[in-house]
Image (cartoon, rainbow, N blue to C red; front, side, top):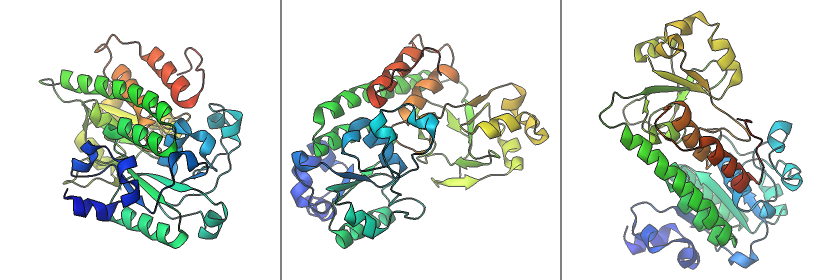
Length: 338
């Protein structure tokens, strides 16, 4: 990307702090910064714009968060975090399907910066720029691609004055991603494992191949059966389409759908159901494959290799998951809890 074009995208004052030389040279930057971000030591009050940024900030700098964008009312979820995090108020979101945090309330909270994580389409960039101009609060939009998780943690760690913690989290993220790539490479030359990820109570919502919602299963080498000409969105599918796809594996994070599927006659003709390869993906404290699509998906990479590709690795997945919970959530996971 030419330097003059890049400088129109991000704030000049934050460039040296936020982006390493590799990111400057990349065709697509990791961080889009609107407004003048304070120095790391001066950032004490942070607003999370949505669910993905909630998850990232809870691992990276929970002490700086003024609240959560997503609901913080589920006692099962709160049990995985410190009392201070469990007490964080629900402020509402600034991104996603409709903002629920009024600008007047946002301004009254006097945050030092707004952090947003996810897709960085032109629409989201325009929204971030407009909000920064309206409120005079700097806005940092982070590309939420799973493969960039280590860099997200490192760069935001620098930005927020918690570089040491960011580096520690990034190191584990790199290890998990490397192992997932190795798993994918090991599938070369083998018949593709066709997977369907069912969302919602009826399981008929899914993410199309390449979407941020299905990155984890594709990263480990599985083939997402839901593909539609380069589109990378959530979509509804029909039972007839599923019967044509005949996935080898069906995954879901919705326990209601998981329970009902086995009694639903329409699903009995699906190969994965016949072969008893339907799996309920863990969803606490956040979904391991999605919901939201943030760094929580690193857990999904570990789980997928152990569950969908059994016997392909001698690694102790349980120990690695336990370490993740301790490092990212500050929670001592009980043996056999997942």
